[in-house]
Image 1 (tube, helix red, strand yellow):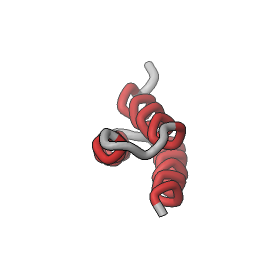
Image 2 (cartoon, helix red, strand yellow; image 1 turned 45 degrees about the vertical axis):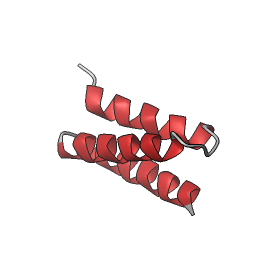
Image 3 (cartoon, helix red, strand yellow; image 1 turned 90 degrees about the vertical axis):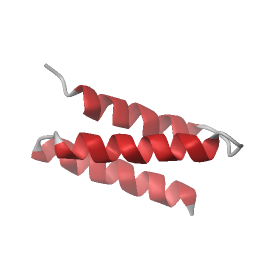
Image 4 (cartoon, one colour; image 1 turned 180 degrees about the vertical axis):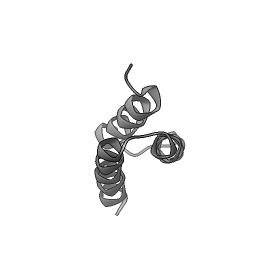
Length: 63
């Protein structure tokens, strides 16, 4: 069975990366960060590495 939290985190981050900045963007960023945190606690080492990469992409996007 696939890790649902991992999949959701990936989807939320991708949504932020593809969206333009507007009022709900900040909320989407918060949701993505929370999803990453939740997924990290319940992931394999390989998933954790991918989550770190997603987190870095998100941080780079916000600069």
